[in-house]
Image (cartoon, rainbow, N blue to C red; front, top):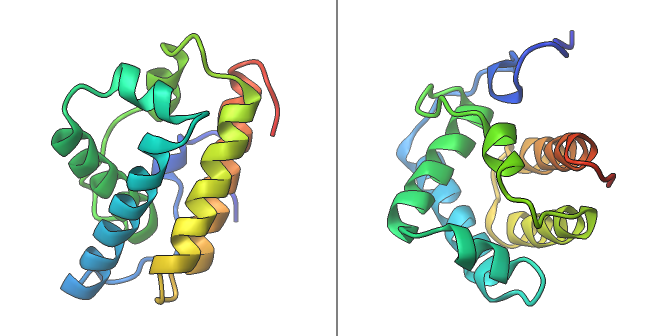
Length: 136
């Protein structure tokens, strides 16, 4: 059952129990993605222009992904609103973000969350690109 009117972080998904192994896996995924994303010629400059405190940003992203996949409740932001403030975002940024994310998932995630992490990222990229004036 889909719930299209709810923000992406509030949709109900099958709930998996959070444990230290899953927590560490999400942490490795976020680290791997941002190591590559920060140096990427297309999306790296966007990250570097807007992220002032990388430790805080990485912690927030770990909270986002554990909340989105494992329903930990640690993230309560509005990602679309945050990205709307970034005037330079274009559809190609979302394409590249998604490609780097999928690579990072393939390289770091061994749990059952692999498909959910990729599926959610694809939906997010499509929604954000569409609402910010582009399309993925």
